[in-house]
Amino acid sequence: MRPDVIVVGGGVMGCSVAYRLAKNDVRVLVLEKSVPGAEASSAAAGILGPSVELFRDAFALQLGRRSRELHAHLSDELDELLGIDVGFRRCGVIKLAFDEADRVEIDAQASALEANGVRCDRWTREELLAEEPSCNPETHGALHVAEDAQVEPKTLLSAVALGAEREGAVFRTGSAVRNIILDGRQARGVKLDGEVIEADRVVVAAGSWTTLIPGIRLDANAIYPVRGQMLATRTRPPIFRRIVFGAGGYVVTRPDGQVLCGSTEEHVGFARGTTFGGMAQVIQTATRIAPALENAAVRGHWSSFRPGTPDGLPLVGETHVERLLLASGHFRNGILLAPLTAELIAEAIVGEPPSREAKALSPRRFEETS
Image (cartoon, rainbow, N blue to C red; front, top):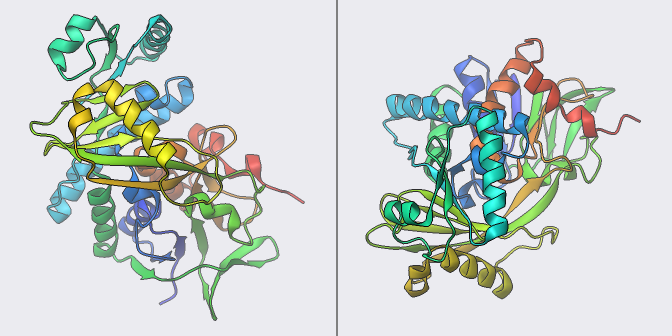
């Protein structure tokens, strides 16, 4: 059966788009070159923390908070539909201050958050250690935001993919898209190895690889890879109850004691793998946040590519090529912004007037028009 929409990419972004469209009775075909979630989605820490990641931009903060609340609804929805708990927990986040410059920064951050309606607390060292005793006692206090949350990315990815299939979406793995098939200024499908598949619309959710697909008229630097290295350990009892940021990194603790430590930001093209230098940086940061982690065993380490953009905002929505849409460029916030992205793509496909968010995230701001 001819699909209404082809989604290129089977990560959390592509699967979320497919799920939302399929729920609206759209015939969706998802094409994934490897297996769903083989790239950044499965490697993410699952932080839903716009108050730390996006506080410098009031608009981006608004997007992140809205999408975080969509996660709460999505979690309930997937639990009811599939009986799968995706690990959504409103655990809260902490940002540590290690010196006077950090104190000034978190005071400014708190003021910015409060000006945008986010309730937060400034903790003294004593208040911090009473709440999270494993934090470094040499800190000068912390910023605490209770409303932020976390999710388990691998479970979320599996659930939205299963949900999309339950609603009628079709997935094809091992399907590398060689180019977008154009008919003048209009997309009419995609070309695989020896096969052309036509559809009414094409949505590209290919992360860092988006600009490499011929037929997408983006500047080559509109979306670029940023390598992030992480490692995992486990502590009993769990070392923290909240997500803890500080010293240029973070420590995320799951309820079962799994601990995720990250992360580097490296502009190395598509060079894969973990490095001594990257791991040293992650370990130094994690142990500065929580000195007790010095005695923890490394249980795993990995890297992935985050899709960065020049202005720090993703590319979501319609392009100058008719019937071609993008859902990419989310950098560190792919998991956070997936539900909102799916909503914006669905609105564009059914022809709703573009919202303020849709206009601001339009891929047309980086497109080559010649």
